[in-house]
Length: 466
Ligand SMILES: Cc1cc2nc3c(=O)[nH]c(=O)nc-3n(C[C@H](O)[C@H](O)[C@H](O)COP(=O)(O)OP(=O)(O)OC[C@H]3O[C@@H](n4cnc5c(N)ncnc54)[C@H](O)[C@@H]3O)c2cc1C
Image 1 (cartoon, rainbow, N blue to C red):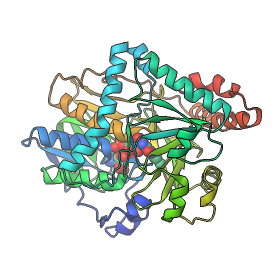
Image 2 (cartoon, helix red, strand yellow; image 1 turned 180 degrees about the horizontal axis):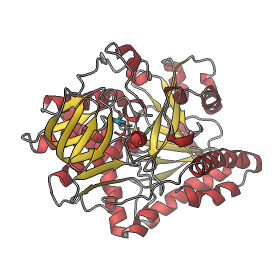
Image 3 (tube, rainbow, N blue to C red; image 1 turned 90 degrees about the horizontal axis):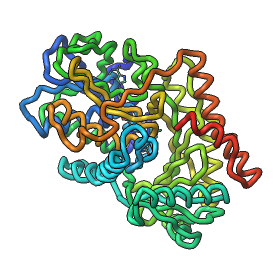
Image 4 (cartoon, helix red, strand yellow; image 1 turned 90 degrees about the vertical axis):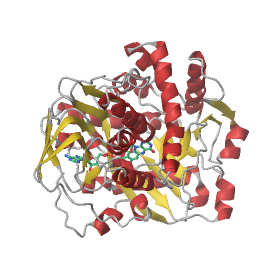
């Protein structure tokens, strides 16, 4: 990605998504790095990971010199554009975390993720950030027999881990419809651990809070390379004892890091604000976030101003992990999302779709998120959240702050700390493998719709993508 934008970039940034447009922010970029600098901690990337890290560090030790270097503007990446689920979802199952650590470790990580939802809301309130949040939980509808089987299996699995009704539970058809009146509802899962948020208001608020606490946020400053002790940009070099990579889906832009994290696109549409009588028919009275149990992920929220924001995967992975503004907007995917939305809620058939956008999230080769800090080199990282980055990036920020401050805490002992994923395959294998995986999920949903039985395709592919 380049930085070919001029000082009057504010209109460009404002048009990136519904969230950018409604963040009540002027989007005027902060100054770029003015030349070489010495600092204690340099953080590359001004999204949730970078800004939470900066904020927790500044709160813990106001004497630390902290610089955030952002290629565009704070909240330009996934953090400003996402579906606004601040959830306790972690991208790996309890089973796979336990396999790499222990049952206790997996449960501790799960508990920390649940805590992250409240932590985000509490710290946002403390810092005076109005993220238009409502903690209504998440409802996952089951709208076919195979989805219903998966929904109940998910709750059974939670019980085997000792997690109770307060964590996740099954709703029957009547209870589910009372929360969310979608079509063909057989039942649902419900968890209280999610808040619907306005992500751009949160990420912009975090940047302001960090600046207020003395953090230097340099915008329109693309970093070309990170090495032990320095961050190289064409505006100058920042020397720092600790350097944190917080570039998630954009990590390929750093020299030598092309195969660490791949960018996979997720796209979103938003309706105009819907009238009260339509909301009476749909539900989501507590602004529960929603999905169903299909294979190709969909996600939605009722916004504070009464819109439906609805997103999903299905956009292709681009050869060489390329990222371009045009990849954010794929008419075929927007049309498919609209069709799915109207299939779920026929009452919104004539509602105007006022916004369409997308962005890149980050996936590592083993689909495992991690944070860490190599004490020998001073290089740290956080990311690979596979679309569950809003809550997870908060946990990452707190954990990175503890690691930078050399603190041995409950957070630094969680089993995702220090995990290293191997590099993705070189092209064209990477392109082939990822796109086959993405298509397989669509085929699996079609197969289930046709046969009304659990998909064999999904069974074949899932070991490779989770
Ligand atoms: C469309 C979409 C919907 C999503 N929905 C949800 C959701 O509902 N819930 C959820 O939990 N997660 C969701 N996610 C995932 C979540 O948004 C991300 O995982 C999370 O925001 C990642 O935060 P981050 O700070 O690590 O990365 P980002 O927010 O992507 O920030 C990285 C920053 O680094 C900057 N950068 C990149 N390269 C350089 C460089 N070379 N030099 C300097 N700066 C650089 C970028 O400009 C960017 O601002 C979604 C993602 C997308 C794209």
